[in-house]
Image (cartoon, rainbow, N blue to C red):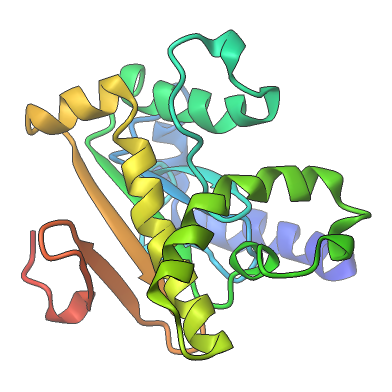
Amino acid sequence: MRELFEGALKFQEDDFMKYKELYESLQAYQAPHTLFITCVDSRVVPNLITNTLPGDLFVVRNMGNIIPPYRENPNMMRAGYLATTASIEYALNILKIKNIIICGHSNCGACSAIYEPSEQLENAPYVKKWIELLDPVKKKVAALKPSSKSRQIWLTEQINIEHQLENLMTYPFVEESFDRGELHIYGWYYIIETGEILNYNMITREFKPINKEKKQ
């Protein structure tokens, strides 16, 4: 913990002062432009990989960057799913955010866990229940008959992003804003070991490196 306390002091003495005026401007309200939905994995740092400042991103994190399908009646949703759903609702209906990015990543533990024997998760029943939401992804990957374990995981991580985009569009307020052109939605795949980020093209259904994409 010593390095964390030292880091806190460094932030207060150095980093905070660099953006002192920005932090002061954020005292009373926030106006982020992008909802960034990603995994809880410690290797994924949203503001770092997007080169953004405090106040730019409204970040939602959970294991596997999962978006539970929408349910009209909140009482019909599993209690554990409400946090993600409520955050999406707040971002769009209260903060009026204009962009959503769903960011998956390489070497994702949640995407690997769905292929592990069930006894491996005996001591993690909540994890086991949460990743059941990835069952449709597992079925889609199986239909493609990947030739190796590494190929299987690679496909799972990317198809998971596609699937979560589909789930996102089940939210009426998301679909309506998107159809009116008021909301932009993106799927990103972050490769940890190279720093490369692939952007998903919803028309061609392909992931392409951002540095080869035309600027939006």
